[in-house]
Image (cartoon, rainbow, N blue to C red):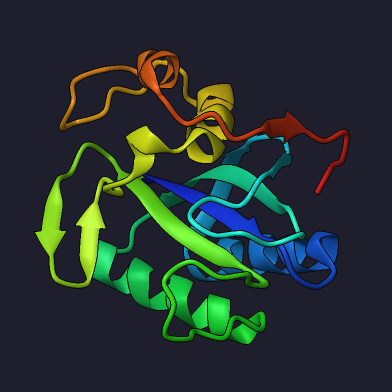
Length: 164
């Protein structure tokens, strides 16, 4: 079994219901969720909107290969109401990013692992540091905690007292 690290994010709709559905679908189609971070409320990154995001990091044990995982995460986003437009950064019901797959490095047109913008985003690093603080980034050779300490992103990331 391989360890898969995902990040859930969304700022539209009933986030509690959407995240719960995402958990159920991902566990059914990818494998067992073995660890999940708290839910964090975060300011939007890369665009302006009044609706803050929720973010949560997950670790899943899976036997599936990365391309199949990507296909399932995109299908899950669509099933949960995600509409993709022309703009890269927009409000959405759900976004499911593949952060890491074991210590693999993949650079293909539609699939980059580790996720290329992890080190620039506190909304990724904060929940990830909660569940995998000593995970070493295979490209930068630093722990998640070290990357978080060096991150220059200043957007607010606030832990919510919510269980999903």
